[in-house]
Image (cartoon, one colour):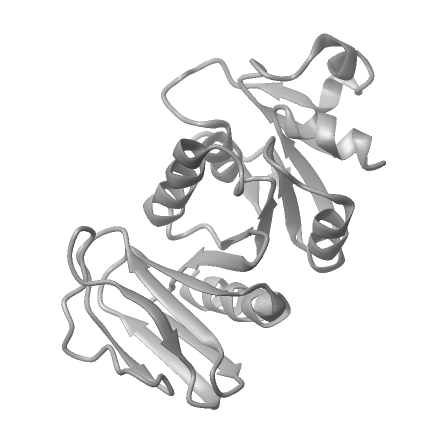
Amino acid sequence: MSGLIVQSALGVTLIGGSDCDSDDLALALRLAPDLVAADSGAMTALRLGRRPKAVIGDMDSLDTLTAAGLDRRTIHRIDEQDTTDFEKCLLRIGAPVILAVGFSGGRLDHELANLNILSRYPQKPCIVIGVADICFHCPPALGLDLAAGTRVSLFPMAPCTGRSTGLRWSIDGIGFAPGGRVGTSNAAEGGPVSLEMDAPGMLVMLPRDELAQAVRAVASAAARDG
């Protein structure tokens, strides 16, 4: 893996080129105040009145006018086409949590690729923020405290098994797999919820209102699993 370009002790908000409004960005920055842009995400950041501390990507989408208005030292061009800009950024950011805005709600192929990347780099504590949901890779052990009826959706990007407490439908003994059994639209019984996964590959989707709690849980798991 390439060396880190951005290291943050507070958390990084990563902005991409898909739809992102000022509310999305403000929400993420309250929890992860260091702003990094993935390629054309810099244009959105500047349009919303925010200046990223770094812009990372192959720069095939960043227009010359925007690039000219940025400090050249903040632009980090990665000249290879084997990874997406989202992947390039994740590999080069070190932070207790990364909140990704502008990576969902646009092209479906891009959105699917971004979810695939979440599963490929389970060591990266990244949460993708969508219009209605948030999504992150489930760490080996995850603890949440959710109101009764809160939706907890699980989607496997690789074959995996695990155990749960506090869910309406237990996942114990179930073999999950893409193209096979999935766990969407489960729900919390009310109170503590725990998930333990035997292997990487499971994505967790929660309502967007649970972002702050997810940040604490994901950052805590990353610090613990180190």
